[in-house]
Image (cartoon, rainbow, N blue to C red; front, side, top):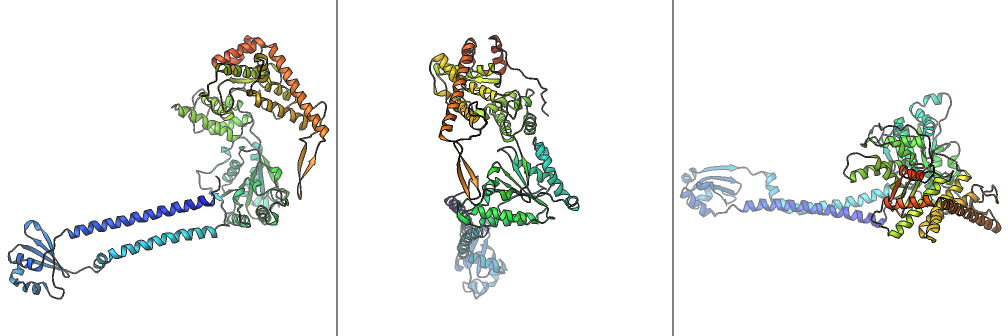
Length: 636
């Protein structure tokens, strides 16, 4: 979540304060309304004079008189009507009425009762109209002082840790290794940490010291944070979680203060795990001179190093951190005694992807045709976060069409949506553009089908997705970690297939091939400068014209190649692209009937799945690529 600016904070405080003022005004209006209603009911009873009361007594109209101090409540015989009057303060009722000619005998025929006035009720009824505004003003000042006190308390708590704590007793947030699929080697590395937190005595008795710091490294979305939470869940210890950027503020020393407070809290809760996500935000190389000696990041990093050195052997506290940029971390963080246990999390392979999909499929109702193995095969290079997004998008697509079960078609569409973006069926192409797009995409697909080292085609479509007017989905036969030179060259030819098809059929080229050209150029340049796959330049890693290197005193630029070598690199890249384009033109010219037939069919149906595409290939005499069939795993 992005950090709020000061004007935004002021607006939030003002909104909260205005809500409280409005609430206080509403309470005041309720009290005033209640008092007004009570006062109206009270004044609705008519008052009469003592002379009128004397006349009514002598006429026999009065039924009873109730005396409350100097107040008189008179009840009449007719309809039990009630009226008020007031006698003299110092005189009794008998003395007061005797002045008006009412004898004690007449008064004795009326039921006279005397009630002692309630002191609290008397004072409340008389003072409430005056005290209520005073109370309201006091309440208003109290609310204002509360706001000021809250702001001052925030200033005093500026250096306190912002760590979020997950208690092991909280079963709703608890995660174990059962909830983390794949990363088998990483789990094995972390089992020692769990064992130490559960039973440290066996390690200490033999003189072993468990690593104090564990650094999780891997691309974004591979499950570093999830794995750290699973370690805490397995060990059943408190889990302190925060991001590296939460230490850094504009004031120098705040980050170091928060580090001290974090470790103080964790030591009190030990055994515990402290997890710092994206530690590269504060753990970068020191000594660059940027910000001087008072650089906030450097002070925060220094405090982390000191706190990790301050651990006693008996303290059951593990510090875990995650980053996808381990190359920028300060060497002091990685030395033995600190983050000396490094766990690498790679992108999941086929089996791991299937297990991850099984986990995210637990709470989703699936149709009988769902095959997670097929989805796993269609998602090479996807991370755990990508697979979770696929399952969620599939459920959204099913709910959007008012269906109760998620089908295989929903999951396949969600894969394409995550890879390429949502369909843009409203983006209607003209007949000319539709024909150009069809030949362009079949140019890619046809060359991928005839080259030996290219990946097979799973789908071809001229329905717009994202910024692309059409797309060709190629997937490898199996996962692999290494790329060969022949595979790179064939990939370049496939990338230029759409460009070559436009030149061959329309004797012109469009802007639709711009991304293909950029991709082919990047692959060719990496072959020459990074992988040493150039025949003329040989196995030398140029990696660009210059390279920025890190030294203990900052960055320096080292020139890796001369102007002549840079020109030779450009010529070699151009030669690779030229040869690839010639190969693409030859392949399309050789299979021109297949190019025309497949393109016309694609114009009609707009989308060709793998089965239909391979049938058309067979009709034109091209043998499709096949792989070993594997048993698909059922949904559990």
